[in-house]
Image: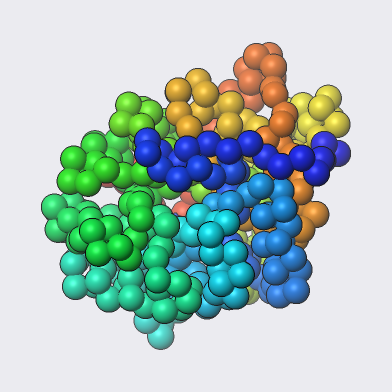
Length: 340
Ligand SMILES: NC(=O)c1ccc[n+]([C@@H]2O[C@H](COP(=O)([O-])OP(=O)(O)OC[C@H]3O[C@@H](n4cnc5c(N)ncnc54)[C@H](OP(=O)(O)O)[C@@H]3O)[C@@H](O)[C@H]2O)c1
C-alpha cells in the first residue's frame, strides 16, 4: 500500500485564505452517524493527522448535537496555532432524533457562534460555514451576519455548504467566501454542474466532503441494511442498501483494478481522483475524508502523492452516471434540489 511519513503539501484555502494541508480531516464520524467509536483511536487519528501535515479539521455544531466540537476541544487547546479549525451552523435539532430544521437568520447565527466557541474552547473559529441554505433568508442577512462575526474577530474566514454556483456568486458579493464544502466524489458529481465552475472563477477553494462516498468507495459494503447497527445512518442510505448497493458495488471494479496497478487501495484511488478532477476545473481542493483510525489516516494522506494516468481517468469517468440511488434519503436541502 502506498504510504509514507513525508508531510503532505500545503495549499491556500481560497484566495487570501490560510495555508492548509492539501487534504483535511473530517471529524464527524468520531461522534455520530457511523456507529460506535473508539475514543482512544479517534484521538490518535487527530495526532496522526497533524503529523502527516493535515491541518484542516472539520466539525459542525450538529455532529452529536455539540459533542463533536466538545470532543475536539482538548486537541484544539493543545494545537490551536498549528491547525485550521472549521465548524458549521444552520442545522437545528431537537429531542426528536428525526427532526432537522434549517436556520439562517441573524439571531440564530449570533447564538450559534457563541455556542460553538464555548464548546470548542477557543475564542476564534478559522472557517465558519453555513451548513445548509434556507432560501427564504437572503444572503444579505445570513452572510451579512457572518461578516459581522469576521469584523468582531470571532471568525476568520467564511464558508458555505451545499450551495449552487449562482448562490455562491450571490453570497460572495456580500462578503468573500473562502471555501465551498459540498459532496464530491467518484459517485457524486452533481457539483460539477455549476458550483465547481463558480468556485474556480471566484477563487473559492472547494472542500469535497464524503470523498470516499461515506466509505462505499473503499469497497467495504455489500448491503448496509444488514451489515450496520441501528446507530449508523448509512443503514438507511439509498446507495448503501438492497439492489442499489449490489449494483453500486459492481461499479467499483475499475477502481480496484487501478488500485492494484498502483499498489494502492480503492480509498486512495478515490481520493486521488478528486484531486485530479479539480485540476481539470482549475480549482484548489482540500478533500476531508473522515476516519477514526490512525492507519487509515496515513493511507488517505499518502493518496495525495498518487497520479492517475489519462487512461485511468477515462476508465473512471462514467461511474457517477451509473450510480443507483440518491446521495440522501431526502435531497430537499441539497444544492442539487435547487438546480433541477
Ligand atoms: N457539509 C456537509 O453537509 C457534510 C456532510 C457529510 C460529511 N461532512 C464532513 O465531511 C467529512 C467526511 O465525510 P464522511 O465522513 O461522511 O465520508 P467519507 O470521508 O467519504 O467516508 C468516511 C467513511 O470511510 C471510512 N474510511 C475512511 N478512510 C478509509 C480507508 N482508508 N479505508 C477504509 N475505510 C475508510 C471511515 O471509517 P472509519 O472512520 O472507521 O475509518 C468512514 O466510515 C465528515 O467527517 C464531515 O466532517 C460534511
